[in-house]
Length: 89
Image 1 (cartoon, rainbow, N blue to C red):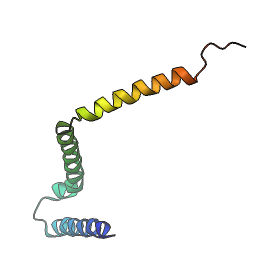
Image 2: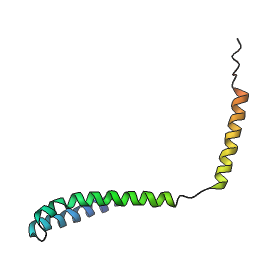
Image 3: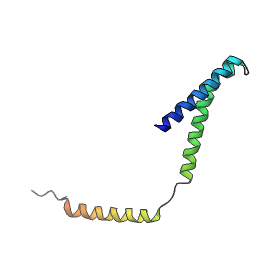
Image 4: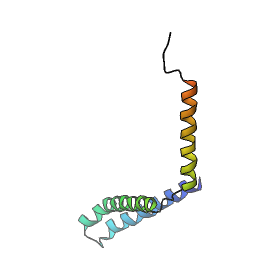
């Protein structure tokens, strides 16, 4: 519940800042109307950056890879023993 309150508070602050810019005419109106679009594009770029950083820092787990290979070998052996491929009637 606390996370949603943070998000709503952030959206209210951003919206009030944007409405304030629209009313005070500090920036030209054509720029002020584009601020939400710039915000969304910036948020998308930030998200892509975080995904890229996460992929670059993705940990490798050699022990888990060995265990996975052992599980694959065990599963193949189990399937060879339990599944009748011959199809004899």
